Length: 299
Image 1 (tube, rainbow, N blue to C red):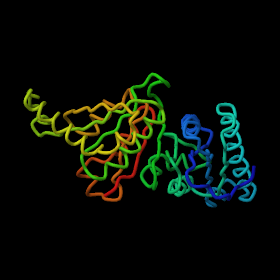
Image 2: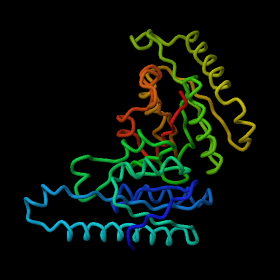
Image 3: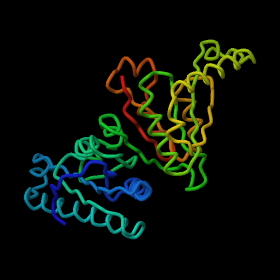
Image 4: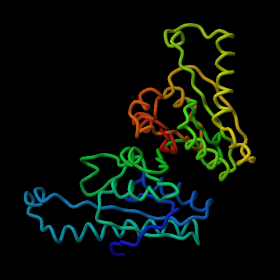
């Protein structure tokens, strides 16, 4: 398999592959998603140029080394294609091998992908040693939904459905729609979490019955407004509303433990909104178990 410059058609499921255990978990998730949604699966691997200063120090030939890296990249994608053939015979596969930084390549392809899937840790000739995981960079800069598949989480069929958090802001609509769609495709229930942060609670004050009732009523109103029209569009999705007290990220982490998929928004285009509304942060992606879908929010 040689380097391919074939355009990736819009609507594909894009998955980053590099042969690592994390990437294999992402590939398995992407295979199942592509099978359920009947979409083409693009197997993407980007390889970097090795800095000449490193080559000079070890006396390596740049042309030979680059050829070996290119061949290794092609082998990685070929192995991924074989895994797809074993797990989902008949699924349409598009191999993509390019001499480009993996983060930039995946973020660029995300603009037209149905979803982009990455593992929580990757590897490469040098980049993994210097830059660590590509998942955070792709999730932060992607123009479409990104699923980060992390270790842990429930086994297939043993989870508690899809979980999504809403804060009442108008920008939360894209994550909500993505969560409804994911639940519908998989035949899962959907839990909509609304977190109330109260200074009295943060200071260790008691959660009185009156305070709890007020918070639950607020949650019902916020969620009802946020999901307006979606229940009619997805009548097959069973929805549960959950009202909790505390900081969004902490409460989301607790609630996310048993979910098949957690859907969160990313306010990255507006740093002020992110600071005020608690957009998902890198620590959440580092600590979460299982699959987390990050969806760019409207501002």
